[in-house]
Length: 212
Ligand SMILES: *[C@@H]1O[C@H](CO)[C@@H](O)[C@H](O)[C@H]1NC(C)=O
Ligand SMILES: *[C@@H]1O[C@H](CO)[C@@H](O)[C@H](O)[C@H]1NC(C)=O
Ligand SMILES: *[C@@H]1O[C@H](CO)[C@@H](O)[C@H](O)[C@H]1NC(C)=O
Image (cartoon, rainbow, N blue to C red):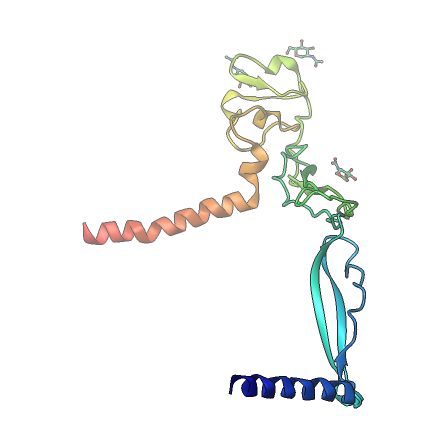
């Protein structure tokens, strides 16, 4: 009885083997591995085999995929950082220059990557307003304890005009070496900011006046 059972299985197996040989359907050998798909960083390599049949339409391709590393890092191109702050104006009036800088470090170029394109600095004209006029007939005897001698020594102005956020000296020196930067205070945006701060205060003041 048992022999009969196994005998049948062996018989069916033999039939299958004969069928395979008869139809010549079989896997081809694996192809060799392809080259890595990239020349830097991580890629893949493949090999394949094909289920061959008499009928070409029924071919099945089976692919093996492996990750490969080229042992060479891909180039990283440099990019600019954000602009730094403007430095102070070179003049107090009559049009000066101010400059701001950026660095090629966001990221820094690496592995033969390109350096950032363009300049690492930018110039802009600043403090374009006219300078105060020089007094026509200056005489040093016009200066005394109550006056400030402008750095150009061609003018004396009242001492209380020193660092009052408004220019009197032709060279702007009455606003030099103050505890603020004159060009920063006088830039339009700062005045607008101050102005809008006052405007925003008004509703608050009204509220207090109404309800208290
Ligand atoms: C401002 O900078 C520009 C460009 O760097 C230069 O041509 C110009 O003469 C400068 N002006 C002043 C007032 O320094
Ligand atoms: C300056 O003023 C003094 C006194 O007022 C006078 O003696 C002198 O000649 C003046 N100097 C000039 C260069 O005008
Ligand atoms: C100092 O000089 C100013 C301007 O020249 C003048 O108005 C003032 O009277 C002078 N003060 C004194 C104490 O000499």
